[in-house]
Structure formats: structure tokens, C-alpha cells
Length: 526
Image (cartoon, rainbow, N blue to C red):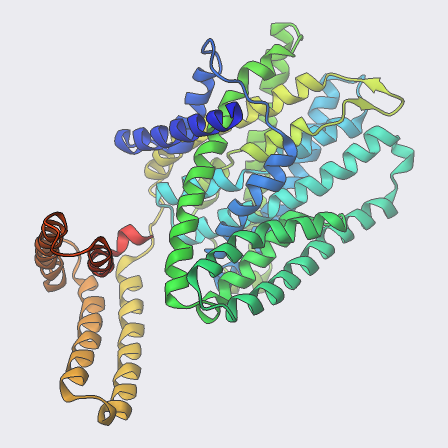
């Protein structure tokens, strides 16, 4: 009962923090982390020790899955080279740089356990990257690259962490090239295989379900099912979830009915909102527990922490600029991908926030090394925690200002609106052709009504090219129709209160009016 009460309290605080962040114009992840830091020292406030398994198997899979569902597979494939350079190359580079720095500062420790810490702090967080990048309003290609990086980098880091821990606990002599190659093959290959099987199995089930509630329940099961299946064969659950999410998301229009898509979209928006808020709050709440176990002298602790933070920050930029511009020396890449403005790698470099996966991985570090030799595990957990807080609070809070100061060229809204209007006109033409083929099967008034719907939708798409300075006919209609819907709702509510209609009749009427209102405000459905 007490555990349930604490969960409700944390969810309520996370919701309040997100609402406060919106009111203040701040990024919710940052405010929630700071709020957690403050609450962690409040006397009598419940203290929570994060379970690494709960994070990696219970919280991360649904968040990765919904992010993958919403990722454009064509855009992901188009940007696969920069995504892999960040998600694989940069993670490995960061892990070795940080591991080397820590080994130089703590030479008595084996290099393998220092490399494990490097793998822990190497991957930017999937939740933080998505939440911050979309809120800042970065160009679409940069958002795609950051989201793609965050979908895959956890797998790279966790595989490297597994190898480093094996070397640290069994002795470096027990970990050779064959072991490393086998771990990589099983983790990535097995994860891809489980993910593809998940797409086939759950895609088959989705296609044969016509009940939105069952579709919604199945969608909730998918990320956990593929993670558990991947873990059973010691493969990467992260890779499995990402592959399953990308595959099912790409085929979603063919697998689900309109009602199922609407309900699943609403469900995952709520689930992501609650889980993201809870995750960042819990990260902040770990501060008191982390500090309690650290016994390093303050000056030494400050020096080691500063060195690790500097290494984490600089490695991203040191890797990014050669990866971006030296690659353009290859003619084929230069023709396909023109050199971006220098502001782009700066913004991508600044968006390296760490999150809950780093903390969960740190909490999963072994208690002892080879030969049952203890080491400063509490110090390593503190270093991971410091990297999370500093990168998230400092870089995340300043990212909007950095993006504005650099004046990164935004996406052209006119070109986007023109492309959408052109496709909408083609869709309208196809709809009219289908209507003409079926016009003899319906009354003329019905055909005229259907024809007006198509014309209005096409006109609305072309109106987007006119900008937002004036009230377009569609906006005027939405404003007028909203007033009419409010009047209709009041009549139905009064009739219910007077006992002239049943509660069921009121619910049916409100449902129809709510659906129409949602069409008047499409931005609220995202």
C-alpha cells in the first residue's frame, strides 16, 4: 500500500512539474530533475533507489518503442550514415576517452572497469534528446539525426559495458577478440532478428484485430515481449525494440483501423508524458543516496568529476567536426549530402544530454573486480550522476539560446506547405475519381456532401501557404463552428440534467461533438 502511495505521489509531482514548466516556458525534463534534487534533501520525503532492471526492462522499452513508432523510416534510412557515426562511432570513442582519463586519474584501477564507466556515460539519453530537440524546434534533419542516435546508442553502450564488465570481473585474459566479436554478433544480430520477428508476429495480429481496445492492449505488450525475447537469447533488447518499433510504425497505416490509430496515439502520448516525467524526477531524487556513499576528499572528488565532465563534453565536438566535414572529401558523399552550415554540428554537439539509462547502467556496475577486489563503485555512480545532471541542466537549459544565437537556418515552411498541398490535391483528385465511379450508388445529396468535404480539405491545404497574418476562411469556419458546438453541448447537458435524455445519449452526443472539435484543432491531437 505504501509503495502504491509513493508511486501516486511521484506521478502527481511529475505532472505538477510538467505543468509548471509549461507555464514558465521551461523544458520539463530540466525542471523535474531540479525538483527531484531539491526534494531528495527534504526531511521525511520518500527515498527511492532505482532498480537498474526496472529502468532497462520496464521503463526504457516503451519509451524507445513509441519514439521508434513515430520515426520516419525513409528519413532514418536517408540519414543512416550520420546516425551510425554518432550512435556507434561516437559512443565507442567517448567510452575509450573517458576510460583513459579515469585510468590516468586512478591508475590503481584496471583499465577494463574504467572503460565500463566510459561506456556508462557515453550514450546521450533517448528521452532527453527527443523531449528537448522537439521542444526547441530544431530543423527536421537535425531532429531526425538526434532521435536516430538516441534510438541506437544505448545498444552500443550496453554491449560495450557488458564486454568491459566481463573483462573487469573475470580478468582481461578471459576476454579475447573472439569473445568481443561473439558478444557484438549475438547482441546486434540477435536483437535485429527478434525485432524483425516482432514486426511479423505483431503486425499479423494487428492486421486481424478490428477492436481498438484490443489493438491498444497489443501495442502495450509489443515492447516488453520483444525485450524479454531478446534477453532470453542474450541479445540486445534495445535493438529489438527499435527494429520492432520502426517496422510496425512504418506499416501502421496498413495494419490498424482509423479508430485504433486514434486510440493508440492518445494512449502513447499519455504513457510517454507520465513515464518521461517520472524518469526525470526519479533521477533527481537519487542525489542524497548517491552522495551518502561517496567518501572521496572533496577536492579530489571535484577534480575527477571536472575531468570526466570535460572529457564527455569535448569528445562529442572532437568527433563531430571531422565526421561531418572530412566525410565530404569522398565525392559520392559530397554529391549526396552537401556540407551543412557550421551551426549544425555545434547544435548537435550541444545536444548531448545524458539521462536515466546512464544512471541505471552505473547502478548495474559490479560490486567487486577480478579476484574479489573492491573498488570505488560509489565514486563511479557519483560520476555518472554528475554527468547526467550537468549535461541535462546546463546543456539542456541553454540549448534553446544556443540554437537562437547561432541562427540555424530553419526548415522552409513554404516549401513544406507547398509539398503537402500538392499531395493533398492529388489525393483529392483520387477521391473525386472514386466518387464519380460510385456516384450512381448513392443519393445526389450524399454525393454533393462528399464532394464538398474533399474540396474543403484541398482548399485548407492551399490556405497554409498564405501564412498566419490573416484569418483564413478555414480558421474563420473553425472559430464559428467552435461556438456552435459549445451551444450544442450546453443544450445536451441541460437536457440530461432535466432528465429528458439518458446519460448514454449525452455520452454519444458528446463523443460526436468531441470528434468534430478535434478536427477543428489538429495541433492538440499531436
